[in-house]
Every structure is written in C-alpha cells, then in structure tokens.
Length: 401
Image (cartoon, rainbow, N blue to C red):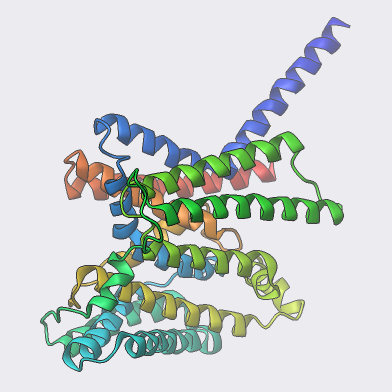
C-alpha cells in the first residue's frame, strides 16, 4: 500500500513536470519577453517602460516585424531568403526616384513599389520552385544583385526628403477624436478596449469550434486565465501608448498583417498546404498538393513584404540610402527562429514570429540604454539565436521520446 502511494506521488510529480515543460516549450518566447521587459525596467531605473521608449521600440523595429511575417512562410517551407535586406534597399531607392526626384504622389508610388517587390519575389520563386535551384543560392544571388542595383539607381548617394504624407507611414499617429482633460489619447483607449473584447471573443469561438469537432481543449479555468491575461496585456499596452501620442500608424499596419497571416496560416487551405509542404514534401506531393505553386507564391509574398519593409524603413529614415537593409535578413530569420519556428520547416506561427521580433527589439533597445556596445550586442544576440535552435531540437527529441 505504501509503495503504491509512493508510486502514485512520483507519477503525479512527473506529470506536473511534463505539464510545466509543455507550457514552457509552448510559451517560452512570451515568458522570455516578459522577463526581459521587467529585467530592463529594473536595470534602467524605470526608463525602459516609459511610453516614449515603448513607442520607440515599435517604430524602430516595425520593418523587422514586417520582414519576419513574410519570412515565416518561407521558413515553414524549410527555406531561407537571404535577399530581403537588399530588396528593401532597392525598393527604397525606386521609391526615392519616384517621390523625391519625380515628385510622384505616394498613393501611386507605394502600390508600384509593392508590385516591384512582388515581381522580384516571382523572379526568385521561379528559380526555386520550377527550376529546382536551392533557395539559399537563388536568394544569395539576389542579395548581391539587388544591392548592386541599389547602388546603380542611387549612384552611391542618398535621396531625401520624402513627402510628409509618406513619412507618416512610420512616424504618424492616429488622430485624436476627443480632447481629454487627463491628456490621454481617447481613441487609443477605445480601440484597445474593442481589441481586447474581440480577442477574447475569437478565442471563445475557436475553443467552441474545437469542442464541436471533438478536439481536446484547455479547461475552462485555463481559458479564463488566458482571457484575463489577454485583456490585461492589451489594455496595459493601450494605456501606455495613450499616455504618449496614441497608437502609431505603423502599429495598426502591423496589427492588420498579423491578423491576415494568422487567418491565412490557421483557417485556410493554402495555410494548411504550406505547413504540409514544409513538414513532409514527398507526402504533400503524393496527397495532390501543388508544392511548386505553393513555393512560388510564398516567394512572391516574401518579395512584397520586403518591399513594404523597405518603404517603412525609408519613411522612418526620410531618405533612400545605398546601405539600407544591410544584414536585416539575419534579423528577420532570427525573429522567426526565436519565435519557435523549426529549422527543418513545417512548424511556426505568426504570433511566435512577432514575439521573436519583439524580443530582438527589446534586447537592442535595452542594451543600448544600458550603454552596451554594438559588438557585445551582436555577440549576445548570436548566443540567444543558438540557444533558440538548441531549445527547438530539445523539444523535438522530448516529444519523440
């Protein structure tokens, strides 16, 4: 009897340990992000979480988050795109030629630049999908080619300034609809409340749908905890932004991108086909999935997202420069891997990619405030990237065993 009681206690402790490991593996980057926020808040003497600094983190890293969203689909297929930084610079140069030199309206120039980015993605996607050249080689060629073309377009010089309407993509804020005596941005608080309610509602709908289809769902207590945490985070961030100038326009753009990519990857046939192709190419082909077509359109999407990131960076710098986007392909890939994507493809989420990008942004901003040099910043980020991949391999081995 005593041995049975002892055995049940041991099994109970093992189950609790397994559950904690599962929770950590699933939400590791979120836990790390929250820990970094509190750590830098303490180390910077309360400067880090000030509304101005939080806004700066979003503005300074918005182009990386856009790149990470596009890179997620590429990584899900088991590929990488090394050319995105050069494509950013090239599209920024084209935007400078149109808006600075030829005084073209941003309403015309921006769609044209996005179309150019899509064409670049189609060019690279053709070689990868239909000719069978490894993506590493194709995009490495793109890195060199489009960096050179950027120099040709700009002649080695920067073009500035851009029209004020274009600059607002990266530096503008939502307008105020009502003057508040407290100085808070009322529209931001209202949107934050709507967003919090909307997120809880969609979480509830997703849970009910899984129950209806006889899938396993978290307990009601777990759902309530997750909903409360969602509301607290959304309203807390809304309060921080409302204390300064409100939501930046680029944050709204990022919100739309996250919503579209979340819907694409979770609720569409195309999204399931992308995961299937990256998870097992041969099985996907045998099941009738047009894997070449999927690969082609994923690279088209990546080209367009790189173009959008290039426009965002040009608007923030208020200049098209030959060195724009240098090494940003590494930041984009690191963001996706930080967020839990697998190096072999088939695993990853848009939420994870954005959280991974925010981890990088928080690290950059926090270490800069503390006066840590760029050399040490690079070394620390490289170490964290390695640890993220090690964690991915560990989780795979643990699930297999």
